[in-house]
Image 1 (cartoon, one colour):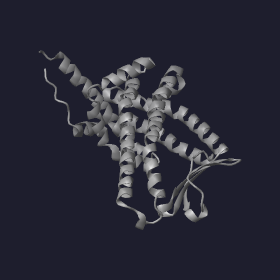
Image 2: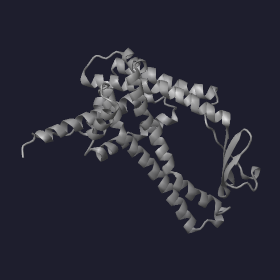
Image 3: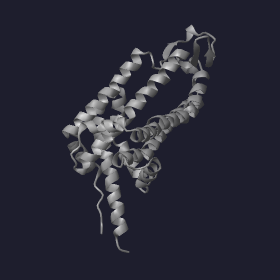
Image 4: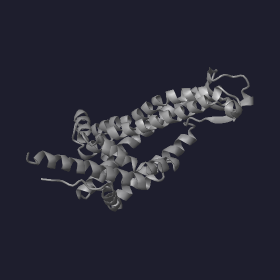
Length: 300
């Protein structure tokens, strides 16, 4: 028994055809509007971490580092070559607001996002879902706990891992920008240092994206089978893409521009990107399972 894995264009076409299902569009609109409202709430409550680029003359001989004061601290990153300083002023009140508001918003959005994923799966299976079923993930404590754990790893854990991976590139950027005060002093070795820093920064971003793709099937597994325990969800989700992880990574990479544009639009483009990329990825996971089953049943 042979099985022909569909081309990625075919999977994307099917995802575009199914994402316009009325229930899918309503659920997506509801979740995306809430996600955008979160940005407004954080802005009104001053719960965002900000930064500023200022003239180097304002800081004179202040070295790169962390400086504490009575209300908080400031992170200073000198860029002598560009005569600019990257300043990140933070107060303890602002940090507390950021952590509290972000945590509450995450606890509210995580189960609703998982509910939208369950609706996508139902549409792919040919069922007749209803929009109100996304609230079951918010009202049922077991579903809520499992959704929060899975979404925390995907949205927080992966980002923290990516930030940690950028530390080497930040250090090389620090050496580059503080080793010269004008372009005339930039040597070929310093230019190579900057190129290496850029490559490491790109590598850190690619690694974070790969890590996200590695754990993404866990989200889909939980959305498809809410009755699974948390351990079973991770075990089955990670095992579902065994032998397909690199191919799944490159499949997701072809949709990377949508993720980038979504971030630039403060999640507004998720009205299209979230159902499209999710359904396409779910179809990929589904086809991988079918191909694995066909290969298992094939005679010697």
